[in-house]
Amino acid sequence: MRQSAQRSTDGGTPFGISHKGELHLEKFVIRGGNPLHGDVNIGGAKNAAVAILPATILAADKCLIENLPCISDVMASLQILSELGASIRMVSRSTYEIDTTHIDCTEVSNELSRQMRASYYFLGALLGRFGTGQVAMPGGCNLGPRPIDQHLKAFTAFGADDSVEYGQIHVKADKLLGAHVFFDTVSVGATMNAMLAAVLAEGTTILENVAREPHIVDLANFLNMMGADVHGAGTDVIKIHGVKKLHGCNYAIIPDQIEAGSYMVATAITKGDVMLHNIIPKHLEPITAKLRAAGCTIQEYDDALRITRTGALKPLKVKTMPHPGFPTDMQPLMTALLTLAEGTSIVTEGIWENRFRYVDELIHMGANIQVDGQVAVIEGVKELRPAPLRATDLRAGAAMVVAALAANGVSEIDETIHIERGYENIVEKLQLLGADIRRVEIPANAITRAI
Image (cartoon, rainbow, N blue to C red; front, side, top):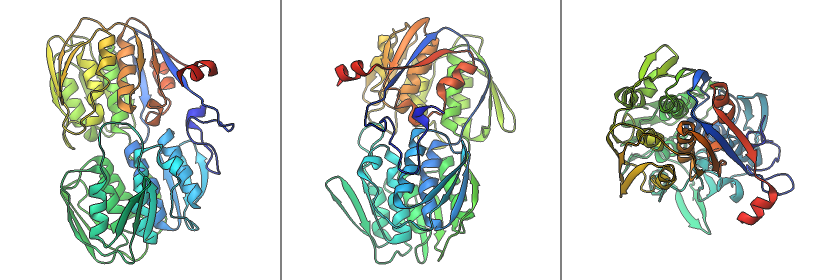
């Protein structure tokens, strides 16, 4: 198991730092131009896993979680659970037994909570079980302001008080009561956090204008497996009848739709032929529709999908929207693909305001892109040139990998720590598909010069 994916849950080190406190950085070296061919297995959904792991706190019991992706955000979540007092046993690479019976701490360490945005799910889980919780302002990708006001709005409706001091968010309630909450904006994070806090609250909770993503449904299914009473997940209204106690369970996390979509785009941009396994085709419909419109051939099976492309790429109009619209996490990858389309494409970002920061990297490769606010106009070019690239965030990093796979020549991608937050064994999986990609450790003196 690679160092970037292997973490102890008994006081091990956070991602990217060795036991001696030394920086450990890598880059990807990619020689593009090879069509991808073969089979790839898709792992568990990152966005479901980072909410389901904190949710085990509510059980005060043993939970066996299967199909966990071996990525740094998951390993950080497991380490947080361990530091809070949970007992964690690794059953296999993707299966962990988590016993939260003896958790005796309600404060998430500053260092770990700043590693990822999803650390805020520990607030809802700790508040739900103990009536109090403290987490640092979340880290993760810089995609513009990510206020937690809608999270706090729900907690306040349930009877909690909140405060933010020195970058620490603290919530506390003498008693949690069900409430009617209408979210001002559709927020995946706020929807999930409210669900976590509400399942043990006294009375009935109604959440309106909620997110509808597949990982919302997965969290609801997990909570119900533990004995919660959650209805309506996947629609814009969720109703929760509070219960007095939850219990442990065995649960398998759904496949990751964004990882699947990323390999679909990688196949499309390289004129490849790839079969994806361990997927739910229904979850991929917004992505599949756009790739078909771009000229790809896609065959769907029960839990698999084959994508091929032989002809030219067609230009598209894409606008990211909450589910079931086109997912914002796929926007950088789709933009990279459309740089090679025959004609003009327009990509509109409807979720995050800073999601086009990566465009300069594509321009270095010869792409013709003009960005005006939340809209990118892409004039297709005949080819992309290899270049030194930087992963500005998780999905932008994946877009750099996809672009480099299409460029004839050698590209190097720095700051790959972002990419491996959300993609399990991405180098090994691409190598199995015929890509010429490898990890290279950056020498310590180069790190020192960079600092």
